[in-house]
Image (cartoon, rainbow, N blue to C red; front, side, top):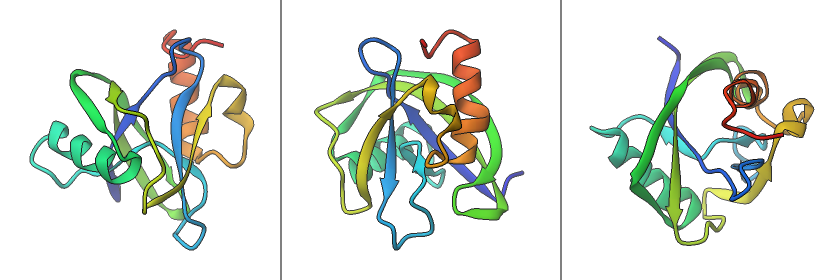
Amino acid sequence: MAFYNKIGLLVLNDKGNKFLVCQKYSQNVTAEYIMPGGQFDEPTVEECLTNEVKEELNCKVDLASLEFVGEYVDVAAGRPDRDVSIQLYSGKLIGDPQPSTEMQYLHWIGAEDAENNRVSLIVRNKIIPDLIKRGILKK
């Protein structure tokens, strides 16, 4: 079992070639781009994503749109001595995402960002390649 166990939300743009990532304030553990979501400490995936999306993106998640994408394990963002497991779900947002008190910036990234050092290792090494391979993320 990974040190951190998280639930993440994959939000694709209309063209399917970019997805939403968050950047925490620089005084936090990391300023790397990470998936929206958080520690899986709620009774259900739906409750966890509902709370995390509200906290991080200032909007709601369309629970009917959620689909399991996969589980990914790699080095935790900002903690090279720890690993993280992300259970990733794709879904749609209700409302326009806006940075919150937890997140300083929101970014849309795509296949070309697999080499971008601002992007967390799990997103670069595991999530982007898998999404491309499976045709979920278009180039």
